[in-house]
Length: 104
Image (cartoon, rainbow, N blue to C red; front, side, top):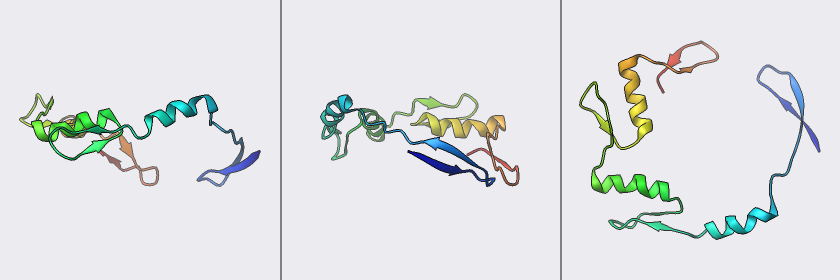
């Protein structure tokens, strides 16, 4: 099955649609569904253990990402990374229309 894909500039390219469902993996996916990881401090639950680990920091107050240039600290690395750009002046995101750059 072929289709056409149009980009923002108006040109088109042909692509091939491929089905990525692998029946061999379906049993593994089903066994993961319905597994819930529960917080010992409140009623929060999630299917992803990494989300529970982040959530528990709400209760423990753990803020493992500390800035060495100022007193701020963060529970999540992504928040720390955005903060640290205030010190470095890095602006990694750029508008493709006006070329203005941004920190986040």
